[in-house]
Length: 291
Image (spheres, rainbow, N blue to C red):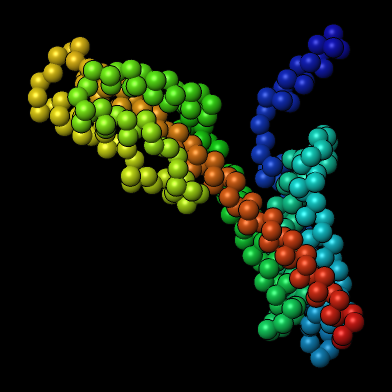
């Protein structure tokens, strides 16, 4: 009986999806909001002479809190390699990463005392803001793109889509054998071209203006429409196969575009985080050794 209850509870727990933003009824949003409000209220209440600045005792306090938070938040990449449950599950850590990262906007800005200039201190602040903005972009992508990817795949995997393309290419190769030279060249162009070539920019924009499959399909379709063909005509079969390939290509390219959107922001967010840590080290060293 107890075993059945435990299994039932485990199934129920696993079957209820909860995103990291909503984790534990927005626990980390509430914590981050309280931290931000506390920082704002203390900034308004505490009197610092001649004015608030990063070099005051209050500025040092906020700066120390901010640095510790940044270092802790940067450990998420390491944390992803360890699986655990409970308060410090990966979902909880990611939720904390997102919301505490946003609270750094308040803490970091108040730490500066709104005194910015052309120096390493402002560089660290600007890098922090850029890292946070890139994180916001990443959150928005992860909140929307997976659902679009799922709808686009229509219960097929990337491997299955690629396998379908290879299968159609084999059928096209065989079906094109009886064609005349001009039409066979069109099919050969479709078979020889890398349908996903062109680099990350082309994949991100999902624009393939020189696609040989689209060109071959449109030209052969024009020919078949201008002259009545029999049902068993090889050209009709080739046109049908090119149409299927074109449709699968469109779905696969869209999938790769969405996948690139999920991955590309990390190529900015992670290096910028390391740049931020380096700027923070320079900021701290210059404060303690040269001021």
